[in-house]
Length: 94
Length: 214
Image (cartoon, rainbow over all chains, first blue to last red; front, side, top):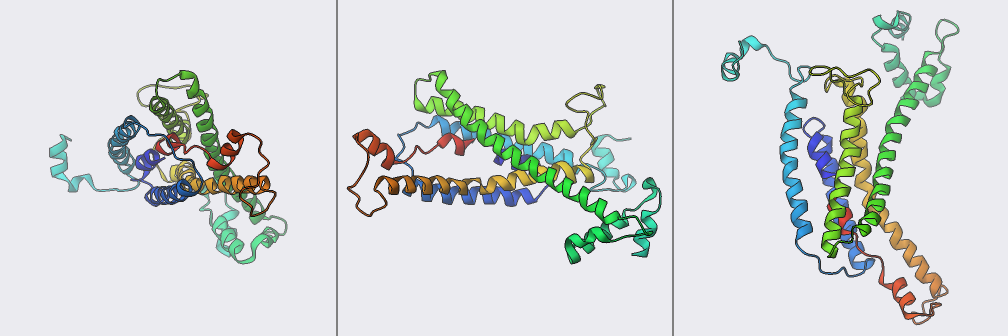
């Protein structure tokens, strides 16, 4: 779910709030239930945590690419192209 | 009111939809009585508006709830199916289940909605009845945020409260233990015959780490 939050959060900023609440509720509910309800788990290896960590690093790239595409919609941020000669020069627009 | 009626009586493609704004304001003040507002003696535009508004909201919330329930169901199915892989260690099994759960949830919650509603015709032409990339939205415009963006956001917000439902399992297991003791405080009393059944009842379920990581 955090991957989805990262994907769309640039254009839908309220998803940052959803991401915060997901982490908050999951942490406290798991902590409470881990102490009161669940049985003691076996000792897991590092592989699971490492794999999750590796997957999450790709979300940063997705966040940037989706954010770039969604915000580049001219209906959201419109501008006069004639006022940006250095952008034309930098990106090779004619 | 008069501007809204004037706008409502125009052809659909020339309207500014002022009547919808008027009906929404009236709905906040007088509630369901808004359906009784009549213009031009017989027309009841707010009744039609309320019907459309209710259907739209129901679909929006319904899809979000459906996706959340579908994800929860698929998590259970994938966890059970990962047993058949016969991994050598528990970590391998959980790792495999985590990856599958993550892919399924990501596709269900983020990609399916995006691809069904998107319209892409630049590099290749898809037929109109294509299930993907033949939707209504050619770009991330205002309508996209109202329809698809709102559904994605609602799905995420529904998922914020999902961990709280785990407390329900705690209450259920507490009730089962209470029934086992015949609803007394005597902790040495039990109806279980085998030691394994007693332990199964009192130790509690396994902490599902793959659900959290996915």
